[in-house]
Image (cartoon, rainbow, N blue to C red; front, top):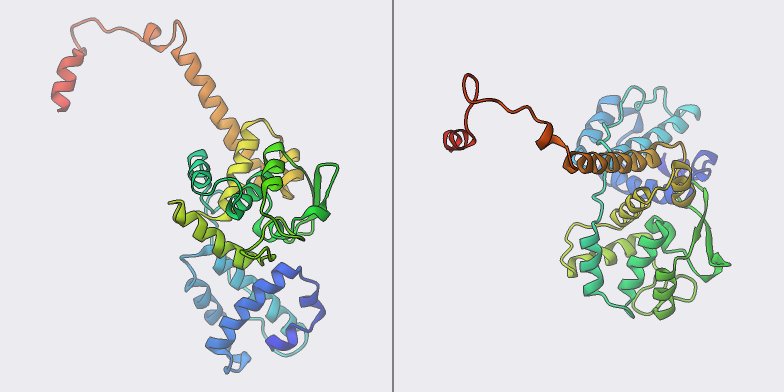
Length: 298
């Protein structure tokens, strides 16, 4: 059934990135249950498989989406009488984007370990100064740049993004090393698939003492810095290829909250602020000296 689905119009209409993702999931499904009659795959089986991935909500969600696509097609093709994915709820999403964002200190540590002239420095700067996901970053090359603007269709949703090449990135690319068709390259200048690049980039992060850091976390610090610099929702969506406002709004809302907090702190620490306006209790009923309260607390 999986092989037949992969020949269907429904499957072929998916983006290449989604097809690769689903193919990987099918490999695991076939390995664990490939010999089972598909009519025996019930809603409880789908739910249990979702729950087995509870520690990685993104993987659970991708698994469920893959099974939904498969069984919806199978039901429409009369291969099954019931769609076992109907009624199975997706895992709850964590609040905010799920990957840990890099910090300026992380960037500095990485750059200290990987100086100019290393392919690892190129990797970071392409990610940081374009904001592209790793699947798009590994495809970016000279052919995408015209008049200092990189134009590329994103792998995830096909949105076209136009990204000005900032001076820092232009300098890093001029020093290299880069590949012939893609700026990000391997040891011998060969282009990399996003999965291979993800593993290599993680190893480069580990070598810099940044265990657990990811390429997507670089994208997040870029979006954070852009929002803190005053980028609007529309500007963030144009640069990062988001749609619908949800992701961009998360960053602008967080940046606005930070700005408001800083402004409040300035007001509170200015002349005539909290220390000068706080009511002063006279010694007597209801009052205690600061020394006595600290002593009691100790």
